Image (cartoon, rainbow over the protein chains, first blue to last red):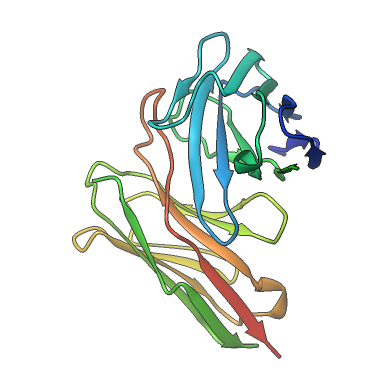
Length: 117
Length: 114
């Protein structure tokens, strides 16, 4: 149980392109989803927290107009990297949690490797 | 207040040995401490977690030891196997309210040799 699917697993695109990444909870309803960014050999950096039906909360230093997050249903959140540039190349990982935080762990997807040429 | 410090950065253990990874936190409001295992190119997978009302939790070969007064917790992997070779992250959070977020340690790359 508690499977989180992330798609696509890898994206290679040209500079200036917008890229959408999907995160789905397959066997539970995710009230809260999180988006992380991870550079090689480094820890996970939280970008934003999204709750179903409301606007995402972005961490300090993360551009909300650059990284658009939509959490339209209890099983789907999307991250759109708008007008991507080479410095946006990274490993993006989502996680999902079943309720509003009390007693439930975060379950992670397998990440999306984004490469901007 | 939000930091979680993890050590060592890397660890090499022989097959059958004990792997020990340590973490220390500063925020006394943290009340949930999970460990995650991450293989290359994959997302982190929850391994084991502990709350501060117990000092130890064991699941199979994995044990968390928790010292509330010292604000430290550690992961012990008994009978380490080559398949345990991965990066391990400790984390901590306040498990209350809608804004509870995980604060991750910097990670430990474990290599188990034959």
